[in-house]
Length: 396
Ligand code: PMP
Ligand code: GLU
Picture 1 (cartoon, helix red, strand yellow):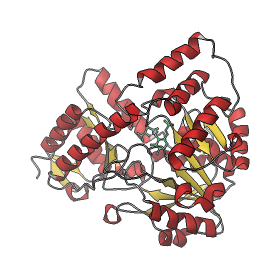
Picture 2 (picture 1 turned 45 degrees about the vertical axis):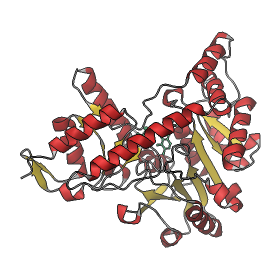
Picture 3 (picture 1 turned 135 degrees about the vertical axis):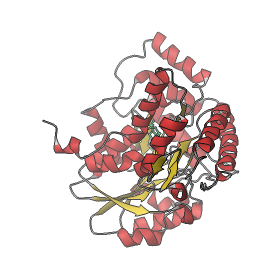
């Protein structure tokens, strides 16, 4: 009864772990949830108020499939202001979350057997969305030894006649690692030479630390503007995960194909959320900075605490709200009488024994690591890391 296509993928592991953690919490079990990548802050008040006005004034009907001109202009202004790049309205599509924009994109560009290069560790949904579109993910593995970064040489090694696209996600989910302008330029050059479409997922753009200056790949190497599709959204920067607004910007033929696909599936993103996103992009940016500063404090704290635990090694990333510690040296040991042989078993052990939810590195294509989201209060982080420390006592 179930199609081969549906059988070829797994449910999103990050969402599954979050559901598990929330179910335990509902049962009254005190879980610290480091599992989900979702800001713990409330959506800023100015944004909520605009949405309430949209409802009260009847802005509650269908609107154009790729978004209203108002939201497109807000995105165009944002791309000019923040990324110094000029786009036209027919080069923009607004979808129900950046995940949905990515889904439309893969459906729009992939033919059977087309290859998409994905650096690992990767965000859980990239590989499965490529598979759903009939394509083949080609993974480039990286480790903490090289700061989880790919280079143009690594890309050259995997290019074939079937290579269609590459995904660059900077700052990265799950590692938090961020590419600088020169690194992006080098990657962009090799992609242009080899006619590879660049999918640049910039959703964590606003969450960078240590005065790191975020650069979009089209700023780093403007020659790829027509062969790069930017993916972004309001979920992370404005604490708007539930509003479901993301967008893509790039070549108008590709955007038009994505629009056609969206017109036959979900139509426009929620009109009310679109109004709210206009306010997020055009309105005051002061809350973005307040949240960013708080994330930076949490990152500093969590990295220091993790590195003080024997057997855990954690690089200090410049972006997003994740850390991706290497836990390989605590594997194949026994803790409190329980053998732990993999990051999956370790994540299970942490959930059952320490009551903390983390995502095993395997979900991101990187065995021997775990992902900890620090999009939670500093009190929760203190408590959760304390539990992690205790769970690693009584080693045999
Ligand atoms: N890209 C990355 C790297 C992400 O971590 C997320 C988080 N869910 C998304 C895209 C999608 O975000 P959303 O659909 O909430 O806009
Ligand atoms: N991107 C977030 C995460 O990785 C949200 C969950 C999801 O969409 O996978 O946790």
